[in-house]
Amino acid sequence: MDALFIIVAELLLLPLILWALIVIELVLGTLGTLVGIVLGRRSPGDLIRRQWLRLRRRLVWSLLLLALGLVLVDLVFFEPLVNVVLGSIDDRDDLEVRFAHAEGSFILGRIEIDKLELAGVRGELDDPNARFELSIDALVIDIDTAALLVADFAIEELSLDGVHGSFDRFRRGPPKREPEQPGPAREFRVDRLHVGALDLVVRDHVGVDPALAKPRELALELAELDIGPLRSDNAAFDMLYRSRGRGSIRGVAFEFANHDVEGAPQMTLEIHDMPLAELAAPLERAAGVRASGSADLVVVDRYLADAEPPAVEIAVTLSLREFELRAGDKATLGTKVMLELAGRALEQLGRDFPVRFSLQISEADLAGSRGLAESGVAERFADAAAKALRDELQRAAQSKP
Image 1 (cartoon, rainbow, N blue to C red):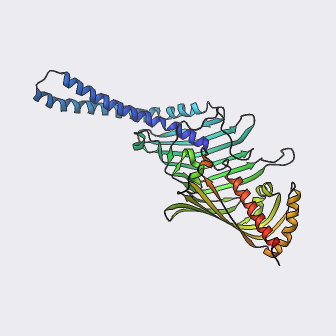
Image 2: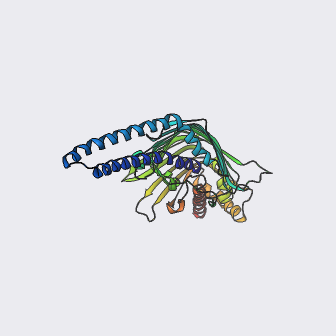
Image 3: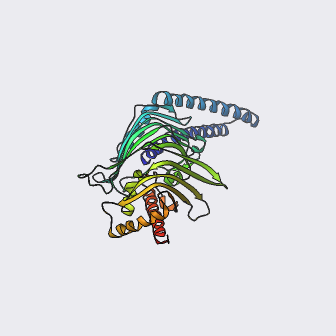
């Protein structure tokens, strides 16, 4: 998401410059006309009559010349200007940008880019935190030009269609932004971010010895996704409760809806018949155990406007079926003892039972995060799930038959 926002922030500068030139030309033209009239030697009646005629003539010619210039820019120089902007981004060591074609209108605030390709790293070039490659069939940016006139950078709609690529993560948790890796040149807000179709391969290299095993791989597909409104400097936080869409993870369908409850925005995510093997890796890292079976997952993210700072409360219900546990490769002695107790606990609980837990994430926790992949939310979720499962098993093991 960082790379996309960097591109959008740079492209916002082009219509801003053109609109600024329009305003400057109109102001200077009007002032020049008024000064010329006032300094001319005319009678008061002639002054009043000629003042309006000359002002109107000057405005007409100014608008005509500006219109011709803007049409020329939009028709002839639009793509070269976009190429100049994206070429300056390509000078960064951590990001490469290419595109096939661009069209649109700066004056109307619409930019369309075809076959956009992005590749880059997060962190140090020689030892990155993450690496990504993306291709976007069509990127459309609709800019709020009225807000732009007062230097309020706003996007009415940011639309992506046909997104394909991969994301490789090498370190857990949010990366520290290096001084030589600045974010977007300017922050902005997006009223609606729409993704028409996306397929992404996520590879997790954390804790994996490349000489002994392949990284864990997750295939994510989105049929549609809508997010908004969101802020570029807090996009990860806004995504938690302002998203809606549907897709699949390794063929397992999911859907999330967004609605207001008592005036507060809330998002609900539902995944049914999810094989627990999909959660095996993070669960093993968090608790040292491996799980098998299946589950229904319901996640409710509720925005807490009264919290200071604002926060999102995440309430989770994990309904387990045919549940089994066994020790992982790096299970500690305490984990193995817990698993011995888990046998009796599962006799009490049965192989089908729910696990409920909640966690709270504040806006300050995700300040500056523009994507969930590196925000640390997944790790906090896995840690909370492992703790809730462990507590549930301990309670069942200590209860009387």
